[in-house]
Length: 156
Image 1: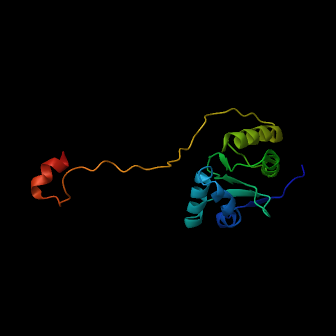
Image 2: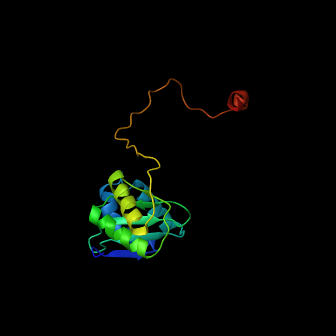
Image 3: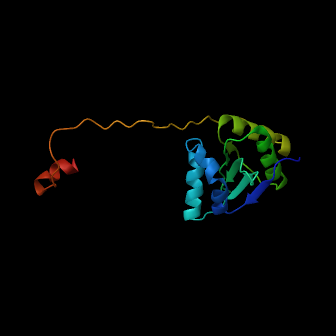
């Protein structure tokens, strides 16, 4: 299959250097991937990463080879197909895929075609975004340090 270039790497710092702008444009959709990439840079763990069209960075696939599904950023169908082609040709076993519904479904479909395997949806997941935080109502009283007389109340 010909299509966009897909860069394979095991360097999370390189992935962040290339893809952080793309991923931070939609930090809610890419929350998990951004969190994991930053954690991997801070404390390295084995991982495999694919950056789709590294010149313009159009998508990212993240995989922890410890039994976790691949994680995909939102990307167009043709880009998903290019990533799947590269990963499948490298004969990497993926136990599943997580990502936005459209990208994950396209990835699973392309994966089953490329690897002659089967796929079935396991569960849908959602992430919730807090857009406004309301402070709790004020209570009466004042802060004070605990004393020995407070032991019974505190241990209860």
